[in-house]
Length: 357
Image (cartoon, rainbow, N blue to C red):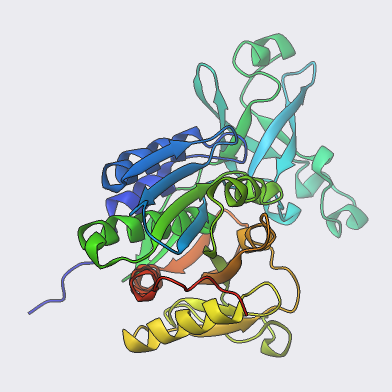
């Protein structure tokens, strides 16, 4: 009998299709609203753009799950007399991959298609060819013939995103523009959806927060950690898969696509939360792997741990290749296993599990 073709979940593919650079998360917010709000006991939005879904509001301890819905982008800053558009970057871009890309500028009147351009290699000196172009040496071409024509379609402050969409490469391995961190937002929302029918088994209050503006400084998580005031938290983000060429395990550790969610250890991670995540993974026979980070991580976990009087925080990551490029790669089996892990972890919590050590 032929193997059944893998069909990715609609909630995830809709999040991946949503264009939501930091500060402009409306498309992803709408997807999260549509899929998560019906399963929540209470549902809120805040002034930063977070989405806050709560299950079992009378429960204890308070567990916050965080995954960010924003992504990298570009921001229109200047249009020259010939209608070429210059931009600043939203989030941490690799300048070597910006040029030669199709982009979508998101305007008040709808999407405007364009391409990122720079001087062709034939017109460069030998020395120029060795350099990575500076941001101001790259522009967006929308086919306009003048500044006036461009301004009739695009405004200063309009955001842009790469025009790269999700597709499966093989089996459960897919590529997308913004797995970072639409997979995290999906995982925390889907965890709450799967816990909803089992609510009577929950001791904890579970608060799933789709956080905004992570890529420019974990800003949504900072606000949410204060307003939710959890005792425990788990941030879900992507981590570097180190199973591809030119990635020295001596420097970057050993994690791989298909190896399961990555459990982090280090100063940012509460040891009791880590132990409970590990115990839940082992009890449910969920494949998992490990990373260590001696510093505050570059994730929402960094901000959440420092909320109010401190939050017992864990970090679970999805192994990902080619982070912060338009073609990130993830094994969706790892995503499903992460959902299973967080469901098992939430159900394992008991009253009194507040993370003090």
